[in-house]
Image 1 (cartoon, rainbow, N blue to C red):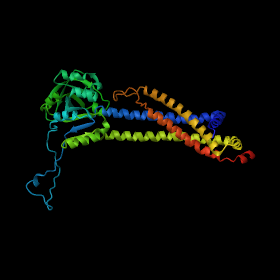
Image 2: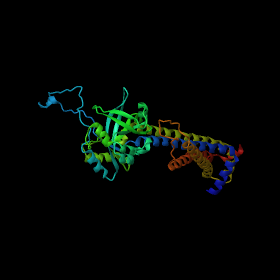
Image 3: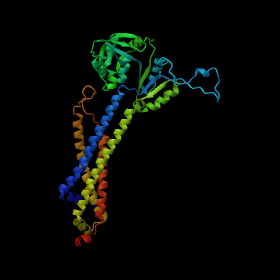
Image 4: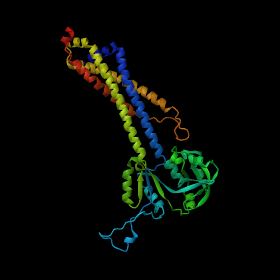
Length: 420
C-alpha cells in the first residue's frame, strides 16, 4: 500500500467536507478537554484532602490504649474446668496511666532507623477550658517544638503569634481558631484550664492556629511538653504518644509490622487506618472520575463513528472509482482509518490545549472557603500522565470508531455503485 497516496486521498476527503470534519474533530476536542478538566480537578481535590489530613497525622502513631482485661478475680482461687462458667457483666476498664513505658528512649531508638525522618513525642490530655460558668471540652497536647515544626509544619498553620512563643513562658498555650472563637478570647488573654483529675492552671494564649478542619480547630490546643507535664502533675519522662514520619508513607504498614516484631508490647496505628474514611472517599471519587472520563471519550467515539459512516455513504462513488482503478480493500480501509486518526490526533491535541487552559483558569480562581478551609484557589493537579493518557485514549477511541466504518467501505462493490 502506498501510504503517501493514501494520506493525500484522506486529506482530500476531509477537506472536501470541512464542516463535517470540524464537527467530528470538535467531538474529540470536547471529550478530551472535559477529561483533562475533570481528572485534573478531582485528583487535585483528593490530593488537597489527603495533604490536609496528613499535615497533622503521623505516618505511624505509638500509644497506650484503654483495655478491658479478661482476668476474673473469682477464677483466681479455683481452677477452670469444663463445668465452670464465669460470667462478668458490665466490666469497667482498670484505671491505668496512659504513659508509654520508656517513651523518650523508644523515640530515640526508632529515630535512628533509616526509614524514619523523625519522631515527635507528645503528652495529651482531655481538658476543660473555663469560660465563666461554661466549661468547653477540648484537648491539650504537650509537644517538642522543634520536632513539631520539622515533621508537621505547625508553625505554618498559625494565623496569629509564633510557635517559638511557647518557649518564652511557662504557662502559655496556642489554641485553634474555632476554640478561640468559642471562648471569645484573643492573643494575650488568659484562660483557666482544668484536667479530669481536677488540676487547674491559668494559662496565657500566645498563638491561634487553623488546620482548616473544624473538628480540630474547635478542640485542639498546644503547649510545651514541660508545661503539660506540669499541669498533669507527672514527671518529665511521661509521654502518651509518639508521632513519627517516614521517608515514604506508603511503606507505613510494612514498617509498622517490622516495629511490632521488634517491640511486641507497643501499640501502633498507621496513617491509612487512622484516615480510613478519607481514604474511602478518595477511592469513591477516583472511581467516579474514571467513569465520567471514560464515558466522555466513548461518547466522542460514537460521534466519530456516526460521522465516518456518513462520510462513507457520501463517498460511495469515490470508493467505487478507487476500486475500479486498482485499489484493494485494505487500501480503502487504510484511507478511512487515516481520516479517523487525523481527526482524533487533531481533536485530541486541541482538547489538551483547551483542557489545560480551563484547568489553569480554575487553579487561579479564588475559592470561597471563608475561615473554614485553608485554601485560596481551587485545587488542580497538572500531571503529564493525565495529558498523555488523555491523548492516548482519544487516539484509541477514534481508531476503533474509524475501523468499523472503514471495513464497511472496503466491502463496497464498485460495479453495483457505478451501475446504480
